[in-house]
Amino acid sequence: MMLSEKQAKEKIVLYAKSIFERGLTSGASANMSVKIDSGWVITPTNTCFGFLDIDSLSVVDKNGELVSGAKPSKEFLLHKRMYDKRPQDTCIIHLHSTWATALSCLPVEDESNIVPTYTPYLTMRLGPIARIPYFSPGDEKLADAISEVAADHPGVIMANHGPIVSAETVEKTVYGMEELEESCKIAFILMEKEATKLSREQIDELFRRYR
Image (cartoon, rainbow, N blue to C red; front, side, top):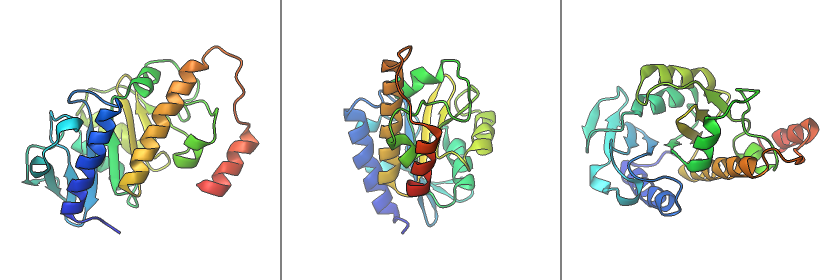
């Protein structure tokens, strides 16, 4: 069920503060949106997740026009393009979290699946994580690139930028982002080690059971 504007604002403030306090983002380096009947609630531009003002959160209508609150994040178009491809989802979070952002800067073999599958949990929550090329924050080309992969990838890492995650509820989006960051951390810890990954058969079983 879609949240009311009041509920959406309360959840953004609650979870954004938790994300900030646990060190998953710093400064004014993240944005979060929640879909409501009339459009979206999104964090304003240049605001810190740890100190959001519920009355200043941006309310944007379905045409992208500001209805109330402060000026919305410059990444609103990025969120909008992902929602367009994932109409079942009601929340999107974009962070500059350390491990996922670090992984975004490294060469990879498969742009459609850049996080090694060492544990089942990322597959259970998000499936394979795609990477898209670098574009400046707020650039329409970045939103276009998200649009090309979002239908098949609720979790995406933007090269030299950071992760973005979409899900059906606020809670699932937060948990998905947390699992993505932890999986990237594990990837760095095991880098250049002879670690065992899940097999194709094991991954396929997870998709049958959980996706």
